[in-house]
Amino acid sequence: MEIWILFTLLAVTMQSVRTAAQKQIAQSLSASTTTLIRYLFGLPFALAYFFFLRYIYQEESVAGNPVFYRAASLAAIAQIIATVFLVKALTLRNFAVGTALAKTEALLTAIIGGLFFSATLSPIAYLSVALGVVGVLIASNWKISLADLFQNESIKFGIGAGLGFALASLWIREASLSLELPRLAKDCFGSR
Image (cartoon, rainbow, N blue to C red; front, side, top):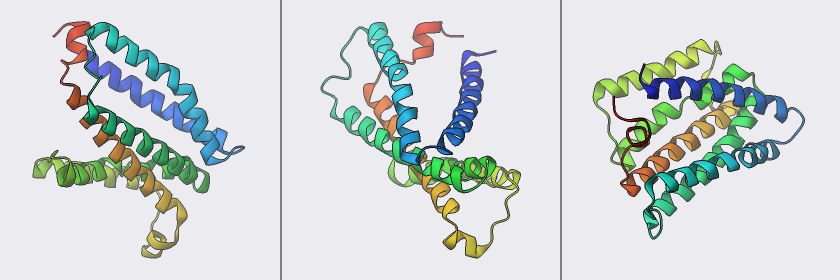
């Protein structure tokens, strides 16, 4: 099995655990406080990863790169706002519904990426993304009426979370590409 598959499975598992924990924490704290806890907890891991990369590449490829800093800063802001919206959506509806609405991220990433980030997909890929989002919404077993789209706050927060996560992933991609570094997996684990 290739290493990226293992990392993907680990990421999916940990994301589900983290989101469930956020829902539990949000029952006794505000959405903003819950988000602050998440990012303060994650900060040491992010710094460790940053210094790990600097150690591996032994260069200052980040220094003096305004594209990297702009994109990374925008991604951080979008990620934090999206997390606040996700926590709000989770407190207004059940876990599956809040998570399903945040999964509109895939569709929003495809659309915004194609329009503003020069990251277009093939028509079949757009169809695949749309079907995936529809599948997640159907699996959440939530009946949505037309009136809900305009009046239900959990829908607004869920889609807001999806939009924030979409923008964050696009800006993270832009920041990563601006560094023009070789693939980490190839350097650390050897090519297969």
